[in-house]
Image 1 (tube, rainbow, N blue to C red):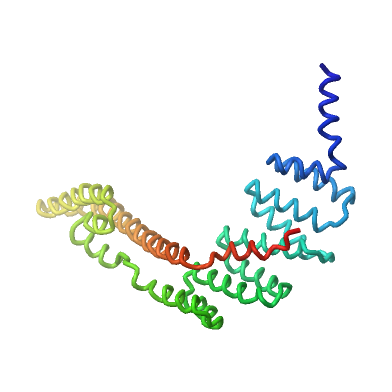
Image 2 (cartoon, rainbow, N blue to C red):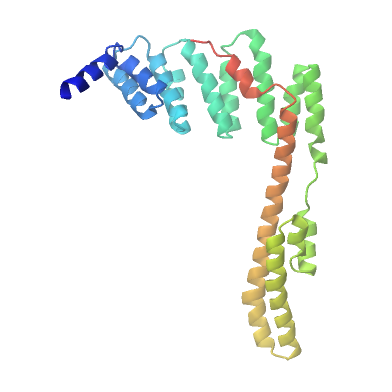
Length: 280
């Protein structure tokens, strides 16, 4: 039995020249931790033809395993070393993609600027188009439109019009919701579409309010004051605070949904980036 296992292992490892091939094998089998270990062993032993290639493979393994921060740190090491190769280009593209997925648009723009300096001239306008989208997704409409206008293409003009129409996206008013809740507890939540909390607020805050009024009518002013300070204020203000947060969140979601629909009409930034790879 032991001899059979040994022969099986030999048959597997006979196809690998060394840790590089073994790392590639583990990567192909989605064993990313093991592949990173083998690639790092290569770096330590300095048994590689190009350091950039190994760093890029490590970053890809980290990225594929969901460790985006570790992938980004490895890619920064790749592009900042003294070695120049096509892996610098592909590393920058992957790094830009990671920052996009992490919503770190400022860092992504820094990478795009660096990438634009090493790409062919025909790719520079695409880089600027992608930069425009980073501003758009940051809700920095002015800068995004400025980038698009400098490109001067028909598709960019149409996109500018769509971005300018963001102001027409239906949104809820925090001020109106708070005024409504102050008049009738729960009505602001009902306006915001939060029906469960609307009922809760109407029942709880409404009962507390009625109890305070009853105490005042009975001239139990101290009891009314205690209820107002420790019950009414707590639940009423807490409810209004949560209401304001909900409206902000829903307004952001409404704009996000609008931008998602808009983005489906135009060239996808990440798809453009992927096409810029050197295919090494």
